[in-house]
Image (cartoon, rainbow, N blue to C red; front, top):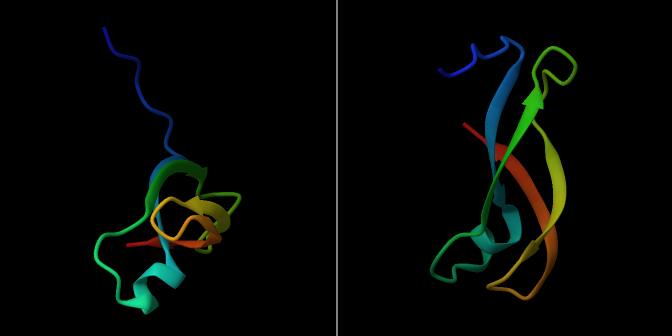
Length: 62
């Protein structure tokens, strides 16, 4: 049986900002979780973009 989910933890998608502006095909996205009670604003992290082959800023979407 599956456990009941806690209310404050939500799944978020991080998308590369530099890749979007470059106009290259494809996207670089990461899926992670955050506690929306502790961090109500949108997340921003530096993650690796395999298409651009460098570390870039990824921001939360939706």
